[in-house]
Amino acid sequence: MTDVTVPRVDAPGSPSTTARLLAGAAARIDAPDVVLALSRDGVRTVHTGGSAEPGPVPRERLHHELGSASKPYAGLLLARLVAQGRVRYEDRAADLLAPGLPVHPAVRRITLRQLLTHTSGLPGLPADFYPQAVPRWSTDPYGNYPADRVVRAFLRARPRHRPGTRWRYSNFAVSVLGHTLAAATGTPWEVLLHQQVLAPLGLGATLLRPGPDGTDATGHRRDGTPLPALDTGGFTAAGALRATPLDLLTFLEAHLGAAGPQDPSMTAALTEVVRPLLRRGWRHAHTHTLTWFHHPSPYGPVLFHAGATLGQQAFLGFRPGTGLAVAATATRRVHRKDTFVATAYELLTETP
Image (tube, rainbow, N blue to C red; front, side, top):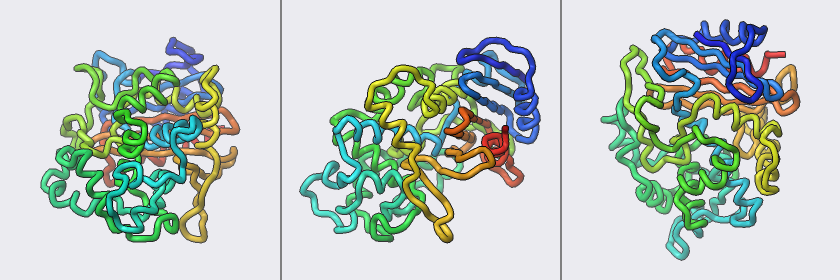
């Protein structure tokens, strides 16, 4: 196990209350590899542990699969493109993807904002996704469903609800958003995300595909069996990112105003994605921003997003009013007694 307290960079530090807090939290998470990283006003504390023996590359410097925790990056990209005037939130996705092609009237009405905020009326995944995925559910459910198939599924879709009227979490919708932004800008998604988000924020250890040998964390089944790297197929925007926990903190710190001088469109985008936007659930008790879940806490609002792949989990969260950010990763997928998300959420909401 390793504890390190650093002012914006990785350097040895003396034990602290925060380090002990992270060590206690990590002990509650059952996974071969665990990283809990906390930043307070730019001062970082990182704890690593787990049931497996550490490898030659420190856990906090391995690329971890983010799964759905990739979506805040897609949201920041959309917000920046809007701030640059290249697209609008109200633009209709079908018009950008296939102008003039006949589609269902409800599909024609779906906007970029609705795709990102899970209010498009689309299901979580396309209906024809499951027949090819179920036989490979525990090994490679997404790899045989490429980008062109995602786009075709969208253009022939029949939304279950009128766009803009109901919230339903949808990997399908956010994936369509990625393909739409690529079409609207004439730039492949990977290049677009790098140019507009990763490079400007200095996220050099955040990737859209596996890194060089030995630099990626290995996911595990519930029984501890290692898993190969996840192939997200055509669902790249919804869950393909891999990042080191240190890069995750850099991403979160940017939302807290710690990224240094920025292009005005990036500043506008970072401001936009933290603004409360909609409410959902029983009596509209749950608040969301453009891309983050937004909850109250004893120390003010918290914004967060979690993600999981076949064998890994990730959690990202920050408190805008207090300068606190929490990034967490684990190399085992959810199991019956899983405490990963609850533990990371508690660090975010209950740390003074």
